[in-house]
Length: 96
Image 1: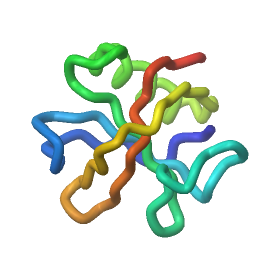
Image 2: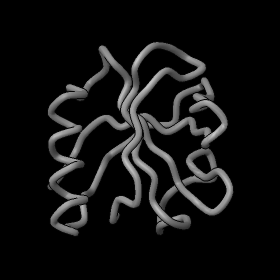
Image 3: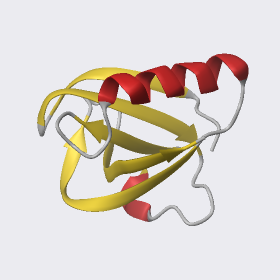
């Protein structure tokens, strides 16, 4: 996936989260990740992926225009990023 936006901040399911947004619905991405014309994925603080390391990888990916692959799970909760999007897809691993 090629990252379109990187977002950080408070969401409906907790404190600071790191989000990425990609255009459309890439192959294999479930509808639970899609909101409007974008797919969203988040890194939960205290989850499987260190948010600071993920931020560094995502910023590098975005600035060098290199795609990044993420492994995710759909959680039972829907996380809403202040009206900018919502998703149930939490990043479990980053492959780059």
